[in-house]
Structure formats: C-alpha cells, structure tokens
Image (cartoon, rainbow, N blue to C red; front, side):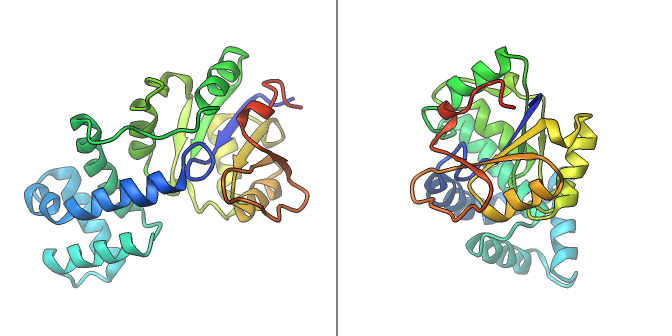
Length: 227
C-alpha cells in the first residue's frame, strides 16, 4: 500500500519550458546585481563562499559571478547556485513577475491524495526554497500546505539510489510504501533500486523508454490508493 508520494518537479509537475525559458533567464539576468547588492548579507555570503570553494577557491566576486552565470547556462546542479537562484526567484514571485507553473491535473490530484491521507513530498534539483516558492505561487493558489516535506541535492544526487534510501529514512516510511513520480528514466531507476514504487509521467515530448516502470499520461491516471 502506498502511504507517501515523492514528486519530481521539472517535466513532472511543471513544464520544462517554465524552468528553462522563465526561471533560468530571470535569475541569470539579475544575478550580477543581486550578488553585488547582497554580498554582505550572511546567507548570501555563505552561499558565495560555498560556490567559490566549489569553483576552486581562487575567484574574486566578479569572477565568481561569471562562473555562476556559466553554471546557469550549462544547467549545473550545484547546491549553492540553486540556493542563490531561489533567493532571486523569491523576489520575482513577490513582485508578481511570474507565477509557479504546474500542469492542470496537478493541483486536483494533490488535493485528492492529501485528502486520502497520503503524505506528499518533493525531491528536486532546485533548492528547497525554490520548490516552496513555486508551489506557493501557482495560479491554483498556495499548494504548500499539502506537502509534508521537501528535499534537494543536499540529500544526494537524483540518480543515486542512496538518496532515495535517505529520503525514506528521513520521512520514516518504508521505501516500498513510497511512490516516486518522474519523467526521467535514470531517476526512476535509482528510486527502484532503493525499492520504491515508480511511475513515469509522460508529459509533452517524453516518450521513454522506461523499461519496467509503470507509465501514466498525467496525475489524473493515478488512484490515490495506489498499491
């Protein structure tokens, strides 16, 4: 019996185009000014120090800005970069520059599953803060009360089975009772190696192959009492 659902974001709850055509360019266009303006804020200073260490430790702020922009362009899954992006997006959401995109089937399904007693969690390469901001500012309202927790790359890589074992341990649910939803075969494979149930969500442009993983067209195809 499934008691918890673990959700990917990009390509699963949210269009890839929103992330790559709206969020990434927004952060890139504002990153330099954000760093120069907030470099002395304790949280930003810590993230810049972490990013500088990841880059090798020898970059001044201007050099680090250029490295961060290069990482954004290459879609690098680097934890301090993702956290900095989240802080920039926080400003954008607050100003109403954009809303968090979710597919039309997502909010009704999340509400149904939550009402049925399922615990809902997110595991994304984006920072926990970025995840919360996205679901807090959708056109379907604030969906964050539906979630029991969020995980980002601080728990481990999304293609690493150990990450999913750690998540199961963190939430206190046997992995066999957790359903992981994603559009990415390697992530689904990793979750399956951790003994989670899996389902591939076939959004636009997603065709697999997905091997032995169950496939569904959207969240509406999933029963809240899966398993």
